[in-house]
Image 1 (spheres, chains in turn purple, orange):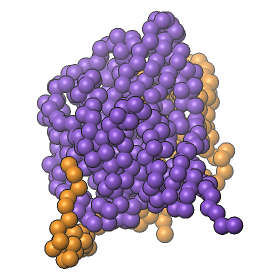
Image 2: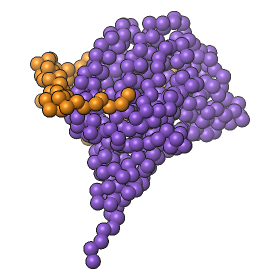
Image 3: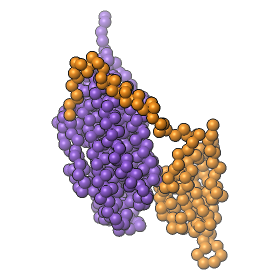
Length: 366
Length: 148
């Protein structure tokens, strides 16, 4: 007797388009997806536990390695939490430089996303173009922070070193040409019929579901919710700069693509404003050399990382080490939505959905 | 912003694809942006954190770098020399296999004895070769500049 039955298919953990070591168990009816279970933990390094064994200064390098495509954002989240916990002040110059560097890293992260997402869908050229601009940004990081990817950019209290000579002019020069480059990406993709067919209506999630699941970042704004931590709870120097939140009501992959392009344009504006109005002054506030935060204090502080709300929850116990350091990773929370987003789609669309969520497995597993 | 509407004429004339192809074609005649690595090298900024070096004439064996290192890759021992305040390192081992290249040791060093060089070609065949002693840390290990 002929009958059909559900088939189980493993996608990953070594699948190139899962952007790391993500394993998805797909339950298929023919080529249509009935259910999907993400299996994570292949890149687990125990960052949260490691943070309990090192003192507050030593933990900064570990925060690079959670979301390694936007390391300065991780550094900023951790450093601001420690500053809030201990009540340390940060100099105004450091706030502006931090904002500019974090926005540059948002641009670098979104460029990497655009290139790899387009390559997953089949537009191979995009990666070469986006990597070209990302390379320029990484060169800026190399000059100002010392490293290209794992930057260890800031320290509790301010910056590690002042900006090198000529750096501001070079970045402003880049910011002047960058919007033209984004226009070029749009020429290649925005009206391309293959791109539209592959992304429009794929990976739908409604605003209610997005809020219920706790999604954040472009995924939430792509469902029409205008929530951005930079506006809702300004940190660093975001309350002193002028920018817009990109929102789209499409709820699909195309909407998230539009949002990320818009965010790159807004980031360019923020960087320009920060560097033009950069105040003089010391790069660090008054911070003791050994940070000892009294017992019983605990702080949750969140920032807007490129992938969404990145939160650090640190509990102090009176020693120079955190008692507990919980990282609320945006990729981890956003990944939970994949089950709902891929239901009813074809196998090839799973790749689009993974790409549009924009996960970094280092961030998911920590 | 909703996805752009596809007009009948645009679909028939492939304008969307032709725009993309034309944009790509223009780049064919522009100069390369890539660096052909083994043949030519890009100039690194002096701030770049490469392989660690130690100037043992300056080192006062204060153990700050050993204390700040998040991965405990520095082990050193000091001895008091002649004269006042002339402590010096008798041995200094740095395991580059454990190093995070975070630059905290460079930052805390009061006499700038430990510093990051601009060298990045540190690949070796034997893991034990990554543990550098004071002699190697002082003059830098034999860097193989890859050439074709």
